[in-house]
Image 1: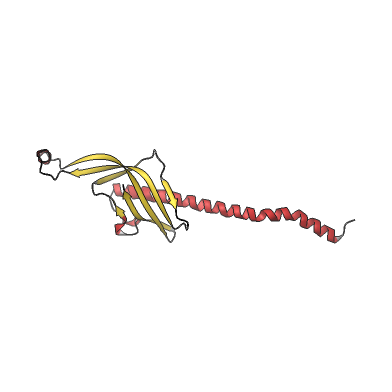
Image 2 (image 1 turned 135 degrees about the vertical axis):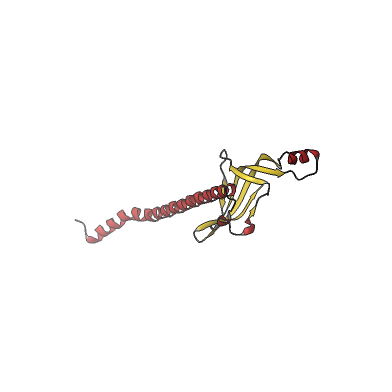
Length: 159
């Protein structure tokens, strides 16, 4: 026959492994929540870059995506940007999670005006061709900052 004290000891011993696992389970839950938040941020930043490129190629007014007027530094000859889907972008978050840096490859269409005084340029202008177009591959580099719950572009360049 067991006493009450022995029953309590047995119950405590049986519950000890479960109690030891509880903090690990709680940490795993926090880790998965952090990973989910990071994945949502990655998706949001990818969508932000795609929306910027879409708007740049369309109307050209990208002010709703940037933090300040001087954030975008793109050569005026660039008339269109296309994603290079053959390579995955590189994304790095700051330790505090409030800023991030992005690098990806892009195809850009360049438009060069014929504004020189050479015979070929004069002939091209006379025939109604005021510019020449070409395509090049560039690296799109962007920096982002989180303000409130939204991400904005703080710097974007094509190198």
